[in-house]
Amino acid sequence: MAFIKKPVTGMRDILPDEMAVRNYVMQVIRDTYGKYGFSSMMTPIVEHIENLTSKQGGDNEKLIFKVLKRGDKLAEELASLKEQAEQDGDQELSVEGLSDSGLRYDLTLPLARYYANNQSKLPQPFKALQMGPVFRADRPQKGRFRQFVQCDIDILGDGTNLAEKELILATTEALSKLGFNEDSCRIIINDRRILFGMIAYAGLPEEDGEKILIVLDKADKIGPEGVDAELLSMGYPEESVRKLREVLSGFGEDAESARAMGRALGSPEAEAAGENVADIMESIQAVHSRHVRLAFTPTLVRGMGYYTGTIFEIQAEGFGSSVGGGGRYDRMIGKFTGQDVPAVGFSIGFERIMTILMENGFTVPGAAVKTAYLIEKGMPAERLGAIFNEAIEKRAQGEQILMAWMAKNKKFQKETLMKEGYTEFRDFYREELKK
Image (cartoon, rainbow, N blue to C red; front, side, top):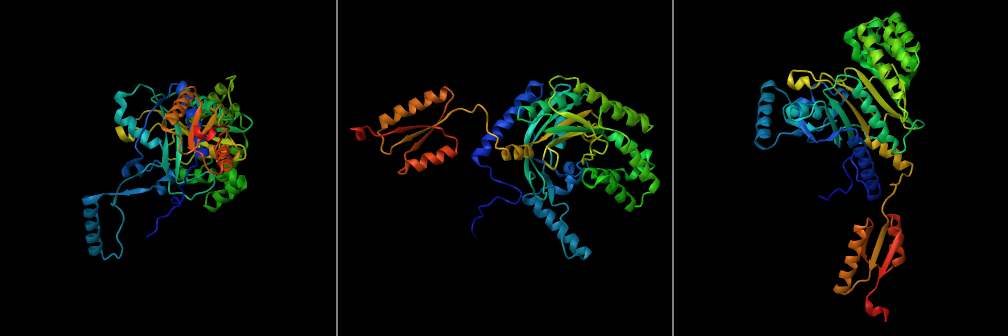
C-alpha cells in the first residue's frame, strides 16, 4: 500500500515562512502575558473521557477525537460487548466503553483538572498561561482546522471583576503589538446572568434556557426578525417573544446601557450582572493606553456550557467569526474537588489571527539579517574550518548564517534563497581556482 503524502483532513503542514511568523506571534503573546504576571504551565493533550463528556463543553463534546483502550483492556471490552450483543440479538457492536480517553477540545477543562490536582502547590490566585494544540472533529473551513493552537490566560481564585479587567488589558495589549487596534477589532461583552434574566423577564420557560440562547446566539446572522420567527416556530407565546424583542431593542452598546438593562430586568442577579459589565467597560475606557473598543452586546451567548457570568468575544474587521473569547466559569473546578473556585479566562484564536496576518502579508519586524554562505564543493578541510569559524562569530553577533554547497546554477540558487528571506550572499571558492 502506497503512503499518503497529504496530511489528514482538517490538519495541515506548515511551511517555514509561516512558521517564522507563528513563532514570532507566540513569543509576543507569551512575553506580553508574562509582564502581567501570568505563569506558563502545560497539560497533556489527552484527557480522561469522563472529563471530556461531562456536559461542560457544549457542542464541542460532539467533536471529540476518542482514543481506544489499549492491549488487553481493549480485547476484554470487545469480548464483553460481543457477548452482550449476542445476548441482545444486536447485529452491530456498540462502541460505548471502547474509549477511556480523548484529545482535548480546549485548554479550559484540562486547566481546571490541573488546578484541582495541584492547588496546594500553586499561588493564590493563580494566573495561568497555557499555549498548545487542541483537537475538534469539526468541518474544516477558513481559519478553522481539526488541530489548532489556542493561547489562553486564566485567573483562578479571584471572584472579583479585577480578573476580567486584567484579562482584557493583557489580551488587547498583545493583539495591539500584532497590529490590531481600535480600528480593526473590538471586544463585545455580556453576562450570562443578563441572558437568563431576559428569558425570565419575557416569561419564557427557564428549563428551555439553553435552547433559547442557541437561537439568540444567531442574532448577528439571522437578524431580530429571524430570531423572533424561530422562537415562534418553537411554540413560544407571541407575547413572550414580543417582550424579549422589546428589551433587546431598547438599549445601546455603552456601559450605561448594560447597567440600565440589568435594572430593567427586575431581578437582583440581572442588576448585579448589568453593574458588573458596566464597571468593567468603564474601567477599561479609563485606561489611556487601551487598544480596542468595548461594546455591550446582550445577544452574546458563547457556546460553552460552563460559563457562569461575564462572557466576551473579539471581533476583527473583515473576518466572519470571532478571533478570541472567554468568560467566567466559577463552577467547573468544583466538579473535581466538590468546592467551587472562582475562575475566568480569555483565549486568543491563534489560527484565525494567523490567517489574518498571513493574508495581509505580515513579516516579522526586526528580524536578523539572513546571509547565505555558498561554498564551492571540494573546499579543503582547513579552509572550510575557517569559514565555519567566521559563521560562528557572525551568529554570536545576532546574524543568521546559512551554509550550503554552491550549485551549478548559482543564479537560480540565489533566487530560491531570496524567496526564503536571504538578502546577503558570500561566495567561497577553492583557493586553487583563484590562481
